[in-house]
Amino acid sequence: MSWMDEEGYFLAIRALGKHHRVEIDQTRFEEIQKASTNLHHVLYIEEQWAAVIHNYFDLEKGLLEAALRHMIMTDYELHSLNDLQLSFAVRLANLLSSCRAYLDQTNRHLGCLEPNCGDAEAFKNARSHEYDTRFGYRFMEAMRNYSQHRGLPLHGSSYGIKSQEPNLLEYYVATDIDMDELKGDGAFKQTILEEITDKKLSAEPLVREYIAGLSTIHIGLRKLLTERVADWVEMVRGAIAQHVDTSPDRKSTPGLCAIQLGKGDEWLQAVSLGENMLQRVEILQRRHGSLERVPSSFVSGAPRPARK
Image 1 (cartoon, rainbow, N blue to C red):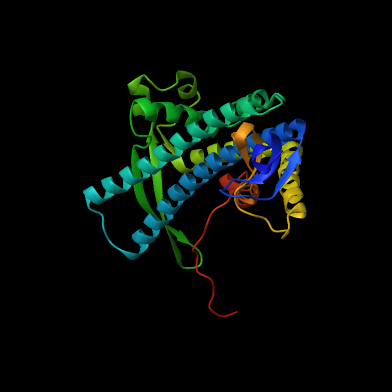
Image 2 (cartoon, rainbow, N blue to C red):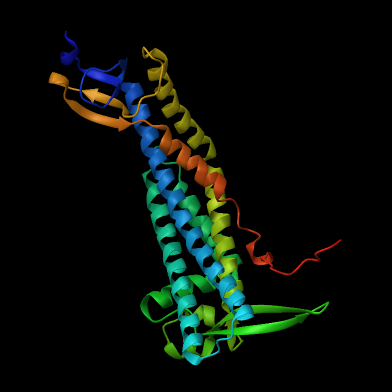
């Protein structure tokens, strides 16, 4: 049988011409295929979580930039204040939208993992726990639904200055949610409204508590998948190493795949095998750690003594 007439399963470079091939059996091909597919679902989940982090960072950065502008410049015109409030409302709406996408898409990707180990159900239970135990989580879930169908998720913003000892001034920006407006609309979740007696709520603490709750869910999900992700990574890296170790130049080559060949060298199935996907999962997990302490943390530009 000539090289062009080979049929079966191989590790091979997907490119024109003759390249080094390693024959594997059908069982190994299917194991590699399953591991790669599962890792793609994990990567999609991590990238969706990264989108949440980016939107949250953008909101917090906007608040800090506005406070700095307040300290350095003088601009109290009504339209400028309206623009400030709108910019925060847009950032918050974007954040809440990305949170909804993360929750929905993660649930779908978990349901696609093979074998099915009940990950989607565990994810659902973790969400329910955070909803039941964190008011900020419950409120922002309801606010997301409201902002998606009824109006912007903020009703006010303001500059402020506080005296701090010794002889320091703290400049800050505050955002508010008007409870009378939510109650008057009739579309906001009633059970959440019944928990609130204040006329106004500060948005920032609620957002941070919501993000902390989502982070707890995501970190718990990572722990749930840790051993299986390690097995899938080992399977894919093992296939890459097998091809490299048996190739004439013993070098990794772009375009490596696990393939099923039919008659006439027809590619019936191909599973891309590369380090990029594996490294991307590892980098995102390392970069985006727990945000559990966000509600009790803050960034400060308070001056330090020049001399000690």
